[in-house]
Image (cartoon, rainbow, N blue to C red; front, side, top):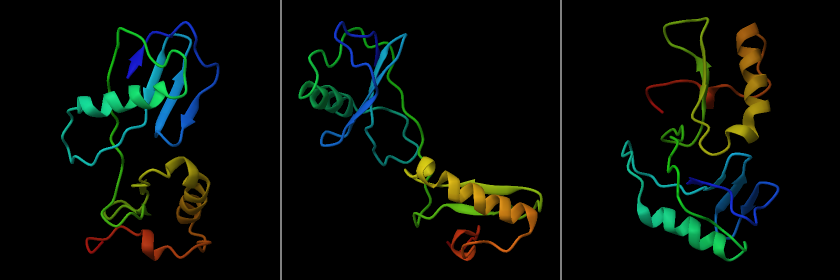
Length: 139
């Protein structure tokens, strides 16, 4: 949820790990986020989840939120059924590499994924076993 900056606003982004709340101060506003629900393609936002963000931030901040809430939004998580990302040549196009489905570790695994993609693109022997990450209909 995005809102105007409170008068007493953190200077740096932070994660309230115990509450699972991310605080993002910005020049133009302030954001509370970090809720996750498995809802398929349902794009509605449960008001209870938004309330958890406010409740969690109250424990740590003097002014945890303010009105009006300018925007509530969500982002899709690219997930696969078995939790492993797909890093593989596309079935119909040899010059296309798919690198997707990293769940919640996309940034953390980006360097390894980048290396693996570059090895696939250049035809090098991969530094890790490529089989678990190959696109397959039997995943």
